[in-house]
Length: 410
Image: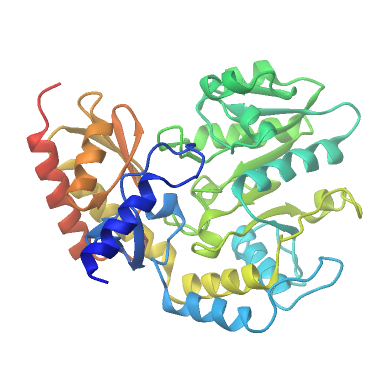
């Protein structure tokens, strides 16, 4: 069969694919990736500056991660969590170490872990567990979770209710009760919502789906103070911002705070679905056998991938890679036409444009071989692999510059 026939067949499959339209109609079918590059079913090459929405931090088809998954797939893929498996405890120890940090008040002289980890499969699941843990730990009628307007925490019903985006709630109302939303970075708005029913304050140190908005240090410090004063949990959603993405292991570390609960996903498996929730040991101990579970959570295949991801991130100094990439990319974006400002941290950036043109810009960039995400009507989000080279940044900015130059005035 000719390559043309194969390509036509792939396009036909894409057109009649019986997948629910929850992501809109796909314009491209990708069949291969390597690092920051992707190839579609017709052999066209693209630069991926979406990175699976901050998943592919080590790049597509990372050979070390692929080898770890392959070896584990031929050894053991899943058994019930009634029994221990080889990699989970190593990953839990590494997460605990990177969350608490050297010299943190979390730690103890004995070097024993300060927290405990639950493994699941996605960011939404991680947030769901955090909500349950908050309710179980605080008890005594404390059940409300406070989150920020514009926040995003997943699309399961409780996680969706936690999202501070009312337009996402409307098709699925009534929403589960107990979720309230304060104005982002406004302590007074948060204080107004605190009550004897509050169980936790749950924040994204950098809002991702809300438009890539970093919090400020004063606000994050106040959240920790209010949590302590009101005896509620301080929880952070690091699903997108965690694991080196912002230039530190976790984004909350930019602000000098110490949360009680940390939700982790996306980059942990570099494409293999695995997520985790870390909680201080005394908080995690509120859970008893049967309080929560996940059939596939922490399976040997996922934890083998995560163990290798964390090993590579530490060995190759990925926090520094992200910080350097962020500096280079931010400077380059700021010099493009029609870009008013650049915001974010490290390899998690948004470019604010001079009109509601982001969807058109993203579509035309795709046509020219560059993937970016129109995160708001006026902004594009860039979360490329943290291994992206300066040459790839230059090539991507050249494509984006041409697209922005050609865009008609708003």
